[in-house]
Image 1: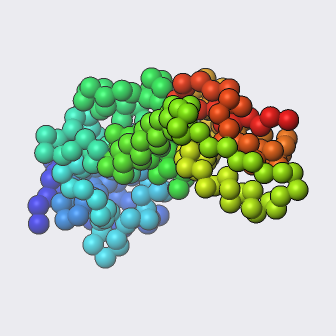
Image 2: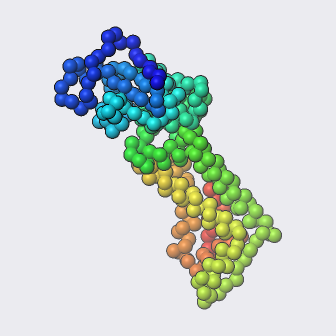
Image 3: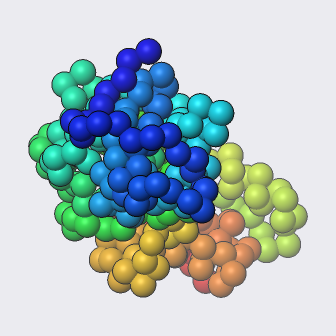
Length: 291
């Protein structure tokens, strides 16, 4: 068993967490933090200097206390906590050389070290700070919003977040490629159905068109991504006012508004080239039905 201690003179007598009597003030108590077998001992005041963090908040960290061992136990990445513990001691954050950036950022997020500190680490590593270049955005405290926020707003925070970002880029490229190829004569597909045709037959004919299926899948993903990011955002007003989010919303809106406006003809003619107004944006505008 390895123990990391702070220089602090004679050890303090043992104490019981939660007891109403203490021989020493709370900040002078000696506490032990066990991170997957690696033990850190220091005064309580070292952590309470940062009350917004997990270890600095006595109420939140109490759920990790093991009374039989008189320690706080965290089943987390041990090498990462070396850097976190050094921050509590020195006020300076530095990623340990043997810890990948995505793992270290995940541990900083778990111990609730704050978005500003995470931005500082990312800046040290040469990564962009803050969403859309705006540092210091607050991170949601509740789950699952917190996890979702990091997955969709911080691609560098974890491997899974990077995979999601890559998948979103692939969907975007697929959508743009489908839009471009659909303008070629050899890929045009027209559906000639009368207004009295069966609805399910019309839908079947529409979904036989590959480009319509591609656009439907892409727009569905863009709508899901925008909705889940709105759900996980800490400031809904700030999210709505963001220029890129506004562009995303109006880019996918025509696809859904065209259905109630003219459901039958939207299904019949949604794959006819020349009936659309398109741009080469990140997210293509959807088909517009002719009267």
